[in-house]
Length: 159
Image (cartoon, rainbow, N blue to C red; front, side, top):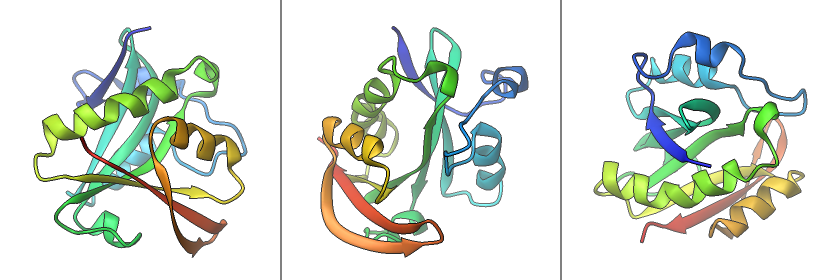
């Protein structure tokens, strides 16, 4: 396994790499195309691709400034992880945990003023909650509502 977090660049991440990206019907997030489309309208959003030996296995979005505010974060020092997903064809191989563990270094190396990473998870997504906890995120106890129901707010300090 050789996991790498890569800022989206269409010269590196081709459309053909994204065409086969598959999510389950129960996933409540968009895939790479959706993340890229949304980031085209908000300069505070950066699509991040999870690569294993140059194969796209997952993606998420890092959202600075206005993103963390929705979840009680700080405009200047927090970053929000949005739409974290692993292609269904690559699940249960440890890619998600490795990517989340590498996220600290990635944020430190690319976002110099960021001190804390925030993410939101659906209350009924116990597998994701366990994954985030294993990766060092803690449940803040903060809750919010969305169209999907209650959302738990987790965070992790950038070390």
